[in-house]
Image (cartoon, helix red, strand yellow):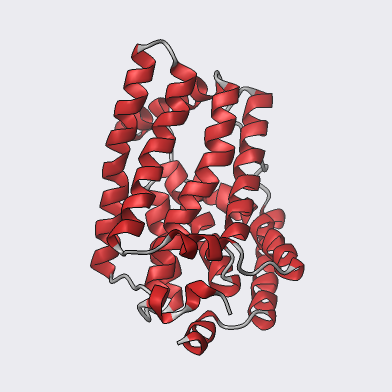
Amino acid sequence: MNKFLNQKYNYSLSFWEVIACFILVLTAQVAGSIVGFIFNYLGLEDLGFVLSFLTGFSLALVLLFYLKKLPFQVYKDMLLTGLKWKWWLLAIGIYASILPFSEYTTSLIPTEGIPFLEEIYQGFIETFKIILSKPISAFITICILAPILEESIFRGFILQGLLNSKTHPIWAIFFSGILFGFAHLNPWQFIGAGILGICFGFIYWRTGSLLLCIFLHFINNFISFVFSLKSQNVEEPFFEENFLLIGSSLLLFFILIYTMIKITPHAHLRYSESK
C-alpha cells in the first residue's frame, strides 16, 4: 500500500478550501508575470516565457503543500502509484476517444458575431502566434512544464483532497475539471480543457496514478503543439466535423470507461484500507 494513502498524509479539502486554493493558484501567477517582465526587459524573452510559467505554478504548488503541511514524499508516492500497463493502455484509449467530442464542443463557441468574444478570440490567437514563434521555449513550457505542474495541482492536490474529504467522486472529478478549464482563462480552452480535465480526473480516481495523468497531458499538448507548429495556424481544427466519428468515438469512450471501472479497484476502498 502506498505511503501517501496513510492517515498521516490523508489531508482533505472542503469546497471553500478548493476555491481558496484556486484563487491562490491564480494569484501566484502574478509572481510569474513579474519574473517574465524582468527577463523580457533584459531582452531574454524566450527564457522569460519559461520562467514566468515555472515560477507561477511552482510557487502555487509549494504553497499548497506547505499550507497542508504535506512532505515531498507524498508527491513522490503519488507519481509511483498505478504503474500497470493495462491501466495505461485503457487510459490512452479513453483520452483518444474523447478528443473528437472535445474539439466539436469547443467549435460551438462563436468566434465572430459577438463583439466581446471576437476581441477575446483575437487576443487568444495573437498570444498563441507569439508563443509558437519561440518553438523551444514553447515546447518546454507547453509540453513539459504544463503537464507536470498543472496535473500536480489539479489532480494531485485538488482532486485528491476532495476525494479524501468524502466528496462523491463524480462531483469531485467534475468540480476539479471545471476549475482546470477556468484556469485557461478563455472560453475555447475552458470547454476543451474542462472536458479533458474531467477525463483525466476519472483516470486519476480509478488508478491513483498522477504520472499517468501527466503523460496523457503531455501527449495532448505535444500533439497540439506539433500540429499548430506544422500548420502555422492555431485555428485549423484537428478533426473535421464528422458526426459519425464523434458518435462512434463517444461509444468507444463509454465502453472503455466501463472497462476501466471493472478492472480497477475503487479509490475510496484503497484509502479506507490504509487507515
